[in-house]
View 1 (tube, rainbow, N blue to C red):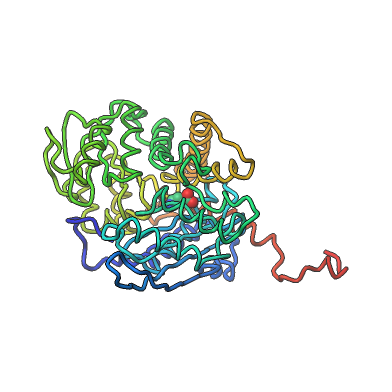
View 2 (view 1 turned 60 degrees about the vertical axis):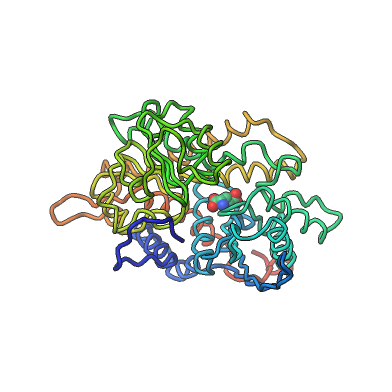
Length: 460
Ligand code: GLU
């Protein structure tokens, strides 16, 4: 997937599966005692569902659509993850994102495994009626693949509250007589959605950044107030992150969408930008702003750069030009492994996706809990819980990272370099270590056969 105008380095491998493989390998180097067979298992998805279905379009023609749902792991509970609607969706991409969800849920300590789904379609070119037909048919094709205790979809790229309402309704019609509300999260409030879910990912980015700064990640910038912030992507995540950073006293100097970016040195008012975007379908052209390209936006001098668009935005082609002091991954996979290396060498920390954007799935979990108890928590209660969980995840990553920095961890956990120093892992690798460890240790404590010994009177 592309955002117009972002440079690429021809030699760089941008295949999402191979990228996730490299990140996984980096983390594995630091995990002791993990068994080879288990590594092979964790590499692969647990279950892949591919469906094809025909849909009649508004003009009477019929088009065939392909959809995927992948569950990567279920050791901590049902699969959890979004469903995206985009022309570039591939099975590989969905598989990589499902695995990312496993690590994300483990990192924030949610009782879910990782899953992801997608339909190959260009939602911008489809009418609402066509999208509804596609969503309903996709849901009925999935039928029992999803379920409140099996696999729980949520919004993702170009899917919305409305999409979740259609999924819920279709599933509910197919499974009468049950409380089916927890089958999908990110629903409208009236259908059992949670207060705060809509802004959870963007606000969670702010909470994660706030905690990392207060822990001294950048010694001379310990708070968000007064920081200059640039945001790539002004969809649900980017616009809500803009609001959250603005409320904390940051200056939002630039934002962008797929059509380009706008810059204002004195700072933009996120609510005014949202109103402009609602009217004009882009942020470009807003009064008193300078129009810039997405490539220029990424390379602006600022304290915090929030990446809230799509994958591979900071790559080998532009990592050397990034002038932000801190990069925050609101989207999944926006920084490539080569860019990670360059940013690490240049002393620019990256708050990785599995920490920075975990707010969305965290409030999804709260929605799932509310649905099972038929409760509706107040907005403040949801936000307090979100903040506490984000802070706890950041603390876990920061503490573990510090154990490398101060040299508490022995080699090979922190590789000793020939000149006597230690090669420190970046925050992504540390976050992955913390996430992979409990998943793998839990697998090792489970029986390796599926025969229920006790039911046969065979003991343990
Ligand atoms: N699509 C979001 C993510 O990638 C949210 C998933 C969810 O709420 O289940 O984290």
